[in-house]
Image (cartoon, rainbow over all chains, first blue to last red):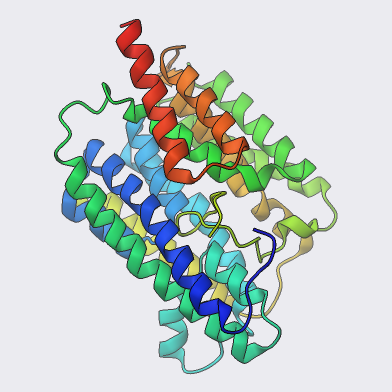
Length: 245
Length: 101
């Protein structure tokens, strides 16, 4: 989606984005309970982590046989991105400390994109809250539905659910491969995993692969696509999918 | 699964958001640091794709997941919706397992 909605369209777009994200929440719920998380843990994760790529990464590492520590590490590395978005949103979200602490939970890809595309501060704040709250509600609703449905599955491997993770990650990585540095980091990270897997405990190669971000040292300034303020595309909260919202 | 990893990830993810929005606020990070941070998703997602497609424990293996993920990659490239892409990845893998167990 190239046109970022403004004005009244922001409300409609926020709700549509929420519905799309809710569908992805269903996928997350199914996969989480298929990989040893309880219904309560799955739901708590969507409420408190609320950044989808981190949640999928956490469960994905568990799925490869990785330790809980490695799963948390991968999730946190992906969550660090939201800190960068927070920097960009700080001038938009002024006000009492309590409100800013609440706003922080809704700092994700989609809300950042919706907010930074607006012409002035009041419109930016409005877009942030509408998209953030809409996605929060529907992401969590989707998670509950998916987790309940997932508990009914008897044999996740027979349904190919282990391949569902990389399939989802393939969608999420798309927008990050549009610039040269992103492609270099992705290739390097893939090689690190292939080379180190036989020698390290499961999950650890994924953390080591994070060193691939150092290719960014050679990039003098962020390219336009790397600025905090990603294109608005419906993904799960915290990252971007590719479907139209 | 014990609760501590779930709560640690929840707390840590929130801390990342708060540090950016409330603690550091409007002061920008050095450009090179920003460039590196912007590459986290590309590196991590790529690592996760490889680990979840061709590794099992400490072994490199090629099994039914690979055709599933390749089919999903094609669907993602065609910009099909996320749930559809995930269903294709899982479905193709399941079919290959049925055909060649």
